[in-house]
Length: 429
Image 1 (cartoon, rainbow, N blue to C red):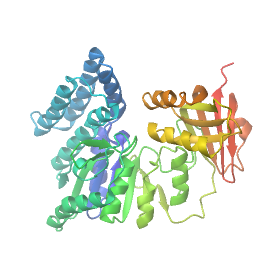
Image 2: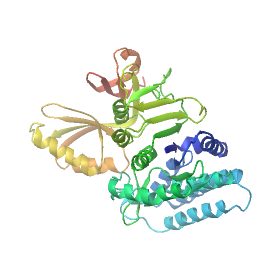
Image 3: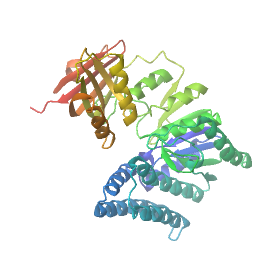
Image 4: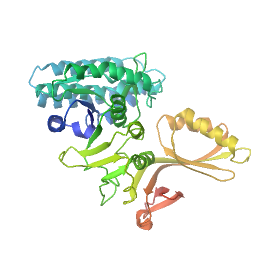
């Protein structure tokens, strides 16, 4: 059994959907679980919809909603004949969302976010499942809410592994047993989504579809996970940001976890751990050139330091925290600061301290940042800069640092045996 994961770029338009069907038909050998993200940039659009809804900007809410709905209908119209049942399924999903948006929002933004943004994955998988059936590929659609059982930490839910394993085995395995004489039965479900034991929708964190694939591979003891991307495989940098990127053909789980932790977007940070536990290899392949080998992540570590890897994170905040009583930044203050970050759900990307200050770099978030600053300023004096960048280089020995940082002002830097990091501000002079 294998697990395939297709991201938004791989299902962004009718031609892409057709390509996915061809990949499933031609490169699946045996039972297959397919995890699918929202189409194209739908999640971004649904995030804007959530913000407009939460702020009660009714005109914006209506226009964004109609744009998202029409985008999916346009794709379906090019894939299916008129009056196909898929149009009723799409209409029903958007009908429920529309009437949800007519009610006033609750006080929990994260709860509303998960309820609204999840629509993208649902509609995407509905379209793909129906299209595969049209092409004669036997498949079964599953609701991820009943497969991935989580806690109630909306927008970044934690997985209940025992309940999830039981749910997956109870629901998906019988399908494969019933179709054991079919060469390639396909189970389809949504990436990014989970559900509480009460049936409320949760999400696993932004770009969480990779994590979904890893969870399902772990619970089903799959032989391999393949993530299909619009790049040849794992690259040592984002080609949209850095020139002359190189393919990392084989790296270890540990190296991939480090890259993910520092912000490499090709793999979700949580994805590797369940695969490592069961030694399930993860392959990253191009959906443009599916016949190519791509990259593989496994136990092999001899190639980890052959190429430097570059990671750029934007929309960073550098916050410096000073005790109002001029007490030292020692265990008591550090413990209190970390508690506030944990309470706000903010992940620290880089930190540094002196005797009287503690500086941290983290991602800016429309909701979490203001809550964090509000709580911290009750106890501490604060100074911060917004709109910064965090540059990370793994295996930096052969890197031209001066060229890399050209046109940027360094506000903070940190270096260890394998990793060099800078918090920088662009110099527009």
